[in-house]
Image (cartoon, rainbow, N blue to C red; front, side, top):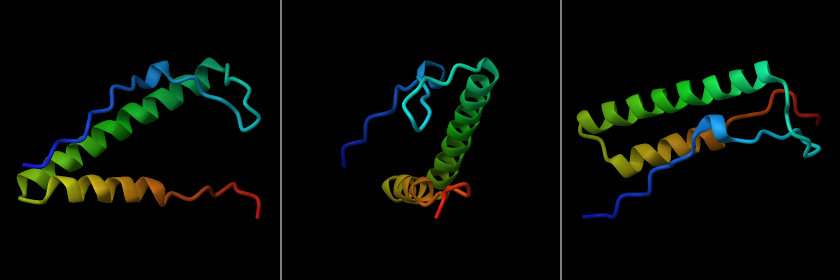
Length: 80
């Protein structure tokens, strides 16, 4: 049996967000939104993984699909 990848123990509330210049993001409202977004994203990804496994899909493949999805996100604000 394949070894299971380690689970992330990252607490979204413990992340120290930084600006592109490296300065800490200090606005409490912004930090709250970032934390809430990560909590929701993690739950949605967890639900999708569980659904895939229950439907007989390969766990490793689903994890790769989720990783590829994240890696493929585009920054709509990037300056060309």
